[in-house]
Each structure stands twice: as structure tokens, then as C-alpha cells.
Image (cartoon, rainbow over all chains, first blue to last red; front, side, top):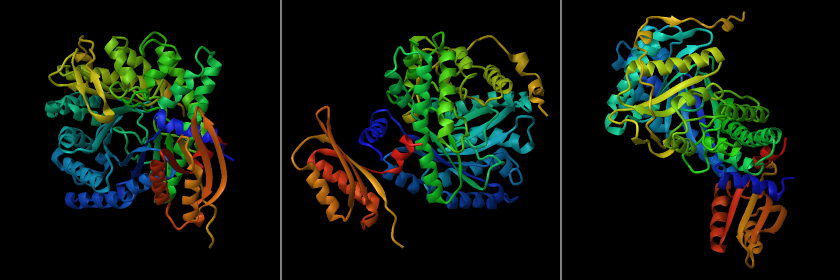
Length: 454
Length: 94
């Protein structure tokens, strides 16, 4: 039988070390909503979302009460809208009406974000894909809760450089449209290489076409728990260090598994996956960078950071995999800048650069995340940064992503405030040399040789 | 159909004082909740108690019990938490 020390250990994780379930995300297929009449399509989408997800928030709150574990977010992801809206939408404006519908449905069921205003263009763009991408600035600026993502590359298809070029321009447009609010709408837009179909985390969540009609995906968290566990093994060898991370990751993931099973049972929607990610927040003690420091670095970004992060990421997976029956999504350590106080400190100290962050994304999920850059950065330079990140994902057969925020009117030395869980970020310098001629080439980069496995 | 045992863990943490167990048990008895196990200790000067109880015999829904116990805790000056057993089982047992 459970003893008092085990109970106290669990409760201490929740009360003092910020253990929580970061999100319960319902993935909803909208393929059966497709109609060539735009009005009818929007009606179908609204009805489907508000029917399938109507109890999500209540169930989340019930689980929270009964297990005493905070469930920070309840969210929804839907089928990429470029696929759903293709038959009805003839202009970017038509697509934006679907964003309005998603926003209204999200508000009706009480979720804080809804993802899936997305296009999958890793090889080529359909007319609908392009219209959707061109509608992103409009859609993000007039909605509150809609998140958008674009898959620009994959190991199997290579990199769609036309898409990469377009997204550099689109990102600046989004920044421009929300410049009176420090370009915050860029937070709701992410580009991917090898985007997973079952990611529960925003802004990149969408419900892939390989998925069932509706599915529950859960993202756990717990950087603070790992950090506290590591404080007890200071100076020990790598074996002890790794074992400690694995055991902690196991415990954290078990909580996610329980919550996912319970949510699945109560909502009568099948359980999809647990995402094992260590997701930081700006709360003190809830930082992935602090774990790296605990492992032995003065700041995240110091020499040794990539190795330490690679080890951390691997041990989290090894511990987590056994704790859950299905693991998926992004599953690794997140290294967003603005959402992690330790990372912000590293930027402010000058310990970490964009290039070091890029190296770190080779060994962890997911990519250049929540990084504020000067608002006068050229579109081609942004596309160049995106292309580099896509190449890392393509060659390493992993998911990588970019969520950059070019803050219009601000430059290196300034700070931008995103609010709440999104934190704040010092603007980071960007390499000023041009990649115009490279980005302006047409077409795509072919798939790498090791993708031909058949 | 008779309801299966519905195990819930109640934890009481706070400054030690006279009658904590009595008050909690009185509430449980009044709510028709059966106590299956009690462990109590003093950790670093703090009163620390864990009870395993069965909620299946009670008419009250879980959320009401949790709320009322929390309120009772405030009256006594301790923190009372009420959680279903599975979360501890999942975390500490393979």
C-alpha cells in the first residue's frame, strides 16, 4: 500500500516543484465537415468542434480536483485547414472566416488555444495551401485563440524553398500587423520540418490526416521536478546523473498517462499519445536552462551545453517511454527563450546566441522557439534562419521548428513582454550578412540520400 | 450494483494542535466515509497525517468532500488535501 513518504513526495512535486500536466489537447478531424459552400463549411466546423469538445474543460477540471494535479491548459487541434477549406475558399479572406469560426468555437467550449490553421507543404503547395498561408496575417490578427503552423520540409520530401521564402515574408507581415502590441501575434505561428500529426503543444498542434476522428493527446511537464532531483546528486558521476533523470521522468510521465486515461474514459474519446516534453514556464524553478546549470554549466549556452542537453533529452525519453503505453508528439526538452527564466538570464548575460540555440536544436525537441529578433530583420534573412533549421530536421530525421518574433520598432538591447506563460525576451542579434541570392532561388531542396530506405 | 471500493488519500499537514485527528474523523463519520488506514508522524515539527478512506459509501460527490475538508482544515489551521489513490499508485508502483 502507498505510504506517507510517497504521498508527500508526489505532493511536494506539485506544490513546490511546479509539476503539472501542461495540456490536454483533443484532436478533432474536420474532414467530414468539408463542403463547397463556405457558410455551410463554417457551420459544420463550429458544430463539430463544439459537440466533440463540449465537456473538455469540465472533465479537465474534474481530473484536476480528484487527483490534485494542476492541468494548466485544455486545448483543441483540428485537421489542417488548408485541406478542409480547399473546396470552399477562393480567397485568403474566405480562409480567414474559418479562423473566425475556430476562434468562436474555442471561446464557446472555453479552451485557451486552438491549433490547426495549418498547411502541409513540405514538397509543394496547392492553390488552397497558398491561399491559407497568405491569409495567416489576417487570420492571426483578428482572432485571439487560433494558432497556425506550416510544415515546410521533411526527411522524405526535402525542403520546399518556395514555402520557406514565402513564410519569411508572411512572418514579417504578421509582425507588422501586430506592431502596436510588440508583434505578439508571431507567437501563434510556427513552421516545421517533420511536423508530427499528434503534437498536443501549441502553437504547432494540428490533427493529422492519419489520425482517428477524435483523439486525446496529453503533454506533461516538470522541469522543476528534474532540477530538484538533480540537486540531490551534485558531483555524482554520469551514471547516477542519468539514472536520476530517468527515474524522475518516469514519475512525471506516469501522471500524464493517468490523466490521459482518465480524460479518455470520461470523454469517451480514444487516448492517442503522451508527449514527454520537458516544457518550461517563466515561473521560478520551472526552467530547462536551470537543469543544464544544475548539471554543471554556469549558464545555458556555455561550452558543453549541447552535450548536456543531448544527455538530458535522451534520459527523459528513456524514463518516459516505459511510463506510457503510447508516446508521440514532440517528446523531448523544449528550449524556448522567453518562456524559460534561465534561458532569459543566459541571453541577458550574453552567454547564449542564436547560433548556439540552433546547435542545441539538433539534439532536442524542437527548434528555435520564442526568440525575439530585431524588427528590421529582412524577410530573406528570416527565411535563411528557417531554412537552416529545416535542414537540421531533414538531415537528422527529427522534428525541428522555428517560432521567431521579429519585433517591429525594437532592436538589440530592447526587451519585449509577451505576458503570462509566454514570458518576456531580450531581443537577440541576428547575423547581418545577406542570403538574398540563396533564398530567391526557385523550387525545392531534394530529400537527403538517407531518406531512400525502401 | 454495489459500488466498488473508492480509495481516496487524505493528507493533513500543518502545525500540531489538540484534536486534529478527532475533527477530521468526526467529519468522515458524519459523511459516512470509512477509514481504511491511518499513518501519522511529526516531520520537522509539523503534523503529518495520511489517511486512506473509502468514499464509495458516502452520498457526497468527491468535489464536495474535498471542498468541505479543505474548509475544515482552514478552521483547524492545517492543510487538508483529498486525492484519488491512483495518482500515487501510478507514480510509485510499476
